[in-house]
Amino acid sequence: MKKSLHSKFEIRLAFERNTENPSRLFKSFAEMIDGINTLDFIIAESVNTKVKSKIVLDDIEKGSLIGRFWNELVVSEDGQIDNSPANEKIEEYIEESRAESFKFLAERKHTVNDLEKLKERISEIAVSKDLPETFNYAEPDTLKLAEAINKINDSTNKLSETESFELKSPNNEVKDIKSGTIKIDIEDVENALTDNEILNETEVYYLIKKPDFLGDSAWSFKHGNKSVSVKILDQEWLDKFLSGQIPVVPGDSLQVKIKQTSKYNRNGYLIAEKTEIIEVINVIHNQ
Image (spheres, rainbow, N blue to C red):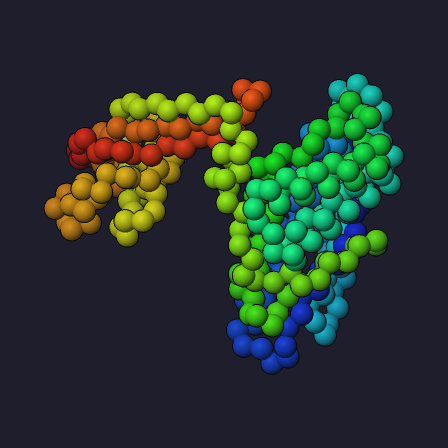
């Protein structure tokens, strides 16, 4: 059995007439839609982990760039132990939590402390809708919430100082979502959640898919059947590679020493993991 929820909202992008490079506005608008979809999914997931989300365009209005949408959230009730809340309460919870997240951006908040207060506010909204009384409710994942807010923040990067987004829904309105807001530092969030950190060093062979010829990004490798992106921290080897002293092409392999960092919360749940190449030992050319 499934239940379908509909969360209506309106996005308005205010800009000056005769603006140059208008394509950037449409790109920004599209990125904002994707960001809202991600945020709504994370909020709805706290009510039931078996949820699917899709945004449907309802109307477009000229003048400013205005789109009216509704997000259809389909919740699977298979395997539920109790009855889920009424649709209206879940829809109100999503709408109000979304608005609080946008206020976070409009007020240019970005610290871990700010994020914790936002999560507390979302929990208060859930309590007001009696959601914690249901077995399936769980607080939104802090790390996912931070990443979703950063995604929405990224959608404003193409805007000028005079341009901004507004978000409207049946009972909420948030204005002045502009570019220039500092992003939430994801590593700070991970560290705040981390109760235990485990470091391991080992040697592996990576098959090169795509080298980084600029020296500041991760390389693309294959490790068995798995594709991985790993940054090389061995600066001495990188300098030789970038200067042409060490020829490397896709299809070659690197024998490397890697450092793996795994971060766990107090319940032993893996929060984040990172792999870095700390030493390049050898290059194996494809024959």
